[in-house]
Amino acid sequence: MVDKAHHFQALHHTGQPLLLPNAWDAGSAAVFASLGYTAIATTSGGVAWSLGYADGEQLPLAELLAAVRRMVRVTALPVTVDFEAGFGATPQDVSESVRALLDTGAVGLNLEDGIAHATLRPLKEAAGRIAAARQAADAAGVPAFINARVDGWIVGGASAEAIYADAVQRANAYLEAGANGIYPIALSDPDTIARFCKDVAAPVNIGARAGLPNLAELGKLGVARVSTATRLSMVALSAARDVAQRLRENGNFDALDAAFGYDALQQLFPNH
Image 1: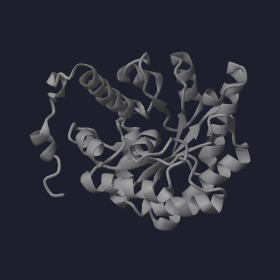
Image 2: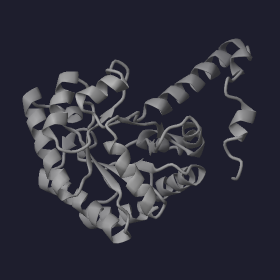
Image 3: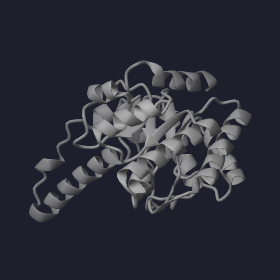
């Protein structure tokens, strides 16, 4: 696990953006691993929806940990987990939750500084939670990659320049507290992405979405990591919904033919 964690760290420093598909269950993790990706991330929204909960730490920690264990079991790739706000009211609680997460075999995690996409935690408090996560990883002997999410562009409520200045200040504080990378979620303007990558001395993670520059262009802007967040799970559920809706409306079964069929899926799980 330590070697896998070191490998995951190194994937952020190859000179090319690390592209991460975000899985929501063991099946999606196995599918993505079969495509030649070098690591797998999880999506908090996708995992929560697959288990019958809304996103936003509505999913009990025990159920998240069980889901992560299943994903780790079906792939030898490094797995990093969207750990939302850390599943704890206090830094000590966050530390205990992170230790439990690392016991699943995960080698990375995202920690966000927003509260319900509405407000930001005070900087000192948010940095303290990052420090607690780092202490937990150190105690476990796992060099976990902590990706500190900066939620200013989601929360809004200030001028573009004020959001940017606060994001850089937060990024530097989180790095000092023990984070390895920074995730300015919802940042999509290419010029601002390039500026942020220059002003933050650490790997920067951008969330993929339709309309963004492609992976190569993001690399030229200085981006070290690109993740798909909830997008792939939404695409999958949207496709299933559309087919089920057509089936209900016209009773025609033609749309049930799958390009990636039963036999191909079975081959992804030869030893499980």
